[in-house]
Length: 380
Image 1 (cartoon, helix red, strand yellow):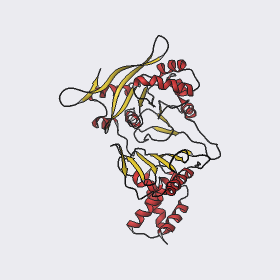
Image 2: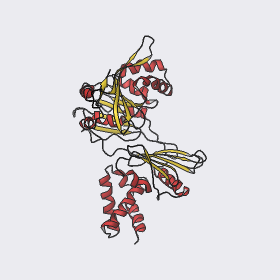
Image 3: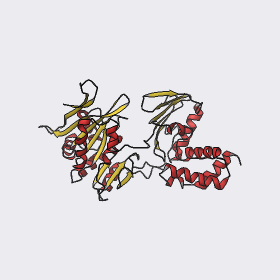
């Protein structure tokens, strides 16, 4: 039996068993066991078969090897023979013998999107999906895209740093370490803001590692990114997109409501970006202290403008949201990418002014301390 037949036979035997496992090692062990039942292979051939089956059933096909490279956070396919990756040093174009034709790019896109029960065709030329191992996919077909197909992949972190590790990495300035730690231990409600790739989720995960083991955390995400092994009692909930029949969608706002019935000590929302903000702030104003969420904003003082936009999406007035936000949030932490580093750059305190507008007072910002060694710390 040739390798392709072994792969096909093993995939049939596996069925949905592989997708029921979250751990990569367990997934590969299961593939290996099933391959052994189909054929006797040497170590090299076994690795080849296991890698290919994993990539096809649980990864991103021929691009999975790039996703497995250390530090890769993004893979961007602009066209055949044009692939870029980001592994923390900015975008780099790589040599490509993987996707050499426009047809191979589109075939991969179709396969990945249909694998998760969605459509990508001329009637639906844009698709967002998430693979079973958490890789986020955006696909755009022509004529919306100039090229035949453009693909963007966001790779989840394989390992999140605990708070002490983040301190060692220099993400948190020395003179802010105890202050940030107390925000968690004293159960303050925290909003983490920043741009894409600034390290919002990294900081959020590190803060969760400081929560007492006696507390129950309900994590709500559009796509599962937060680790469940960073704290002994985390329950993970994820939104669900509609299927090809247009049914089965579960919104973040529904999950926030559901979490209130699950006896949470803390509610964590991976990212607030729509109507779920109303439900979240209502929850935080009714006794759920110590909760956390993230938001896209360029600075702590730009957060109010972002919340005004979300208020419109949530079908409430900015003034109503301002009152809720001021009562719900205690501190705002801003993450920023500086060169190769992701750092905590600002701390703000929310309040409402005399006219009922939501504002943020900047109480600390990150700067290079002029002591001759370029040490970074908070100044204000």
